[in-house]
Length: 163
Image (cartoon, rainbow, N blue to C red):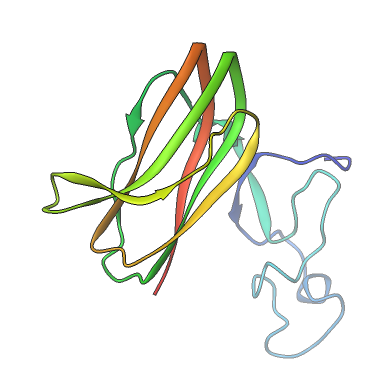
């Protein structure tokens, strides 16, 4: 909004506009209200568009979680993927000498986990970090350790898989 990033959930929902307004005056069977909302429709100063509307009370900070100790993520199913990128987005860090370390793990049997060998470098500040992996097997997770006095990390963790 007003040139600042907005962190709110949006849903794809065409606004009540005419086909001509939606397609900037273009005509044709593909220039209809609701088709291709990423490209058509006006963009508004609040960050919404004619194709995407904000979810009421849809503050995205609900996606972040505060971590204060060691943890493992839930496993990511990746049996059909040949490549993965694991992301650790750090929104806030507090505490003295706070350090987050994270490494990829794969299971031998779906229950017993082993270090895959790829690690993030030490993470100490607000940042977006990622690692790339291949030869995944069926499942993948991150094992993370947090050190430092009163250390707290607000994180968003996700994975992108490619066949």
